[in-house]
Length: 145
Length: 145
Length: 145
Length: 145
Image (cartoon, rainbow over all chains, first blue to last red; front, side):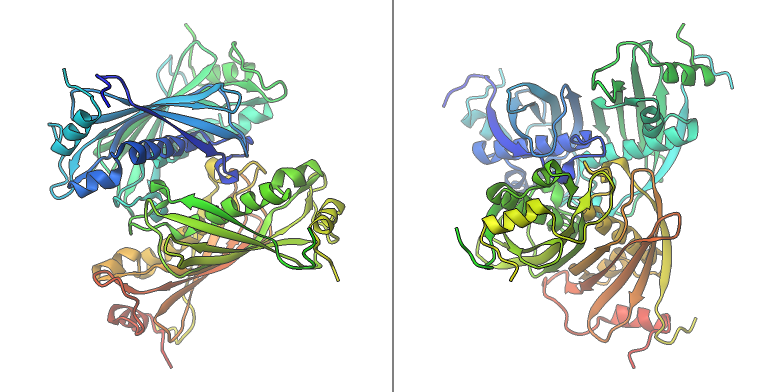
């Protein structure tokens, strides 16, 4: 598969849990970060770049930045689609963008997360892209031009 | 109290719950939005501008935007301070900025939330600042110059 | 379908979210009540007896009792099956029993929840089985002998 | 302090978070296990028998059983008191009972948790009471008659 710097995307379906709603009857805003994580993990399983993959190589990938933009509410029982897209960069970071759509296809929430790589032993942050991630990018046709 | 457009701030102490940590042994990033909410509610109780206050006046104040920036981790049992600051604007919005510090005084997380006003009956968003909020601003010396 | 007091059961697959683990690296015990809810909702969708169904008929079905028994841990990324079984009774209650199994088929957690019916308007508890629930039981061959 | 098998108790105040409520406008039942944990941790800090204390001695103390009994709802903004009581037993277990009261002093929820001791290295369960816990019991006048 050659994608030449194009972004990689995956869709994942979620169903709103009753316990994810709040007293306003809609999904509590903070729970969208769980849906982003659901999307990111689905991405990881599909494209082979998960938290467990990083761990096996000696790294953790803590989140250092998140943004969420809420357009429409989701209610209990709603089924929604999380579209997760890998955003390439030359930095030693993993950036994902998210677009959550309801069943009618309307965008309910968008957002972004940025992860860095930390060495599991030294607990220090990496300033160069670790080899396993560089290899993963090559494997998926993502170039650091 | 006359503050002439100066921001209003309050500090609130939180203690990290065991169930707020994740398999990395640190607070799961999404839980910082709970700490922001703790700070915002402490702000509301102190300055009289809570979710319940809005509801009494016929409005909901849903979150439409969040950002979090993570600098340092928090661990189980850590005690931290959430500094919540009201950011004035002419728009029909409520903006808060947050700074979470650990016991050593280091900043572990910063962020922002933006809320809009919706009419509880019509479920539509307001484009002008509702009267109760205008009054609240005046009362705290916050001017729309 | 005639089941003559036999219990109704459904299986539902869940995948452990990273944010459901704790600093011990395993699912935080309280999250099993979320898996029970996932199972109960899957049961409701399949057998037509959900929270929304109750609401449509003017009732809420709050949980009044829960028990969980933990035999084995679940870890991040584990896939498990929640087996949810309706337990018949003559009382104005809904009782479900749960059995969660890991991919090897080992039981990791069992438990039970009991719900009562409350009138959404008067917020009082019912001491007789509401008609919609009586009908649902008949429809599924569950007799109050 | 000599308590001769009498139970040790501590009270801890909690405030219901907005994000702990559900679409029914009340605290989602599963969140009571968080309040129990708040109570148990307050007990641990006061009486010196925390998760971190156990860890320092080489043990984890996973929860193996929970029960909750719900009498009354709690709503957003409610302040409640969690009364946590240590229940002595000869088994290699830690049992706590909980009573949550609202501001009017009414009991809203009771429950129990049982923890066992596991060796952090071997990940196996202990069938005899570990020394640090035996010492802790003696220190607080709790006898295994």
